[in-house]
Length: 182
Image (tube, rainbow, N blue to C red; front, top):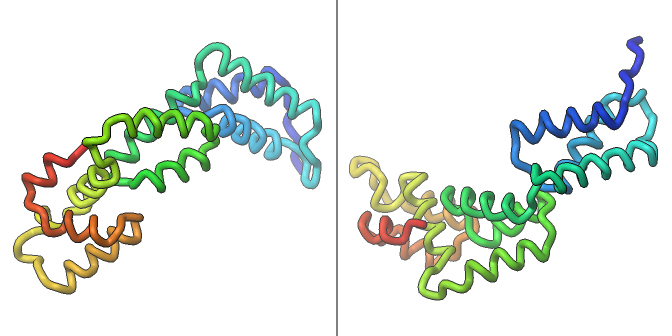
């Protein structure tokens, strides 16, 4: 049986920098990534010690201090990315919480978004979703059938859009949807 590899604070720093070089992350997510790395290096059945947890916390704090991890910047870029993919606000909020963005940062982000009352974010997301999935006016003309429309409607509703909004998007013209895009 192979001898478990040594775990040190230096190893965790290198692991964190390697991870952050490849992925953007929140502080909470970085902590969980480092904890998984520690667990993989420990012997079977051995728990993560308080010393390991302290090292993980110290490394995460260093990454925040040096600006490698910024939860607010991560939340904003993740929000924009998910909106372009056609995700509704409710789904974006759930995703941000899952990724470890603190609730106060999510609320600040959504408050800043709601400052533009003339823009319906969920409607923009539905338009982006329809365009990406080639629904409604983006569907090929030779593929039109009532069954296809019903499948598109069901897919959009499963994605989190309300029925009236789905109907509006599927009945819109291509130009109307393009104007709604984020």
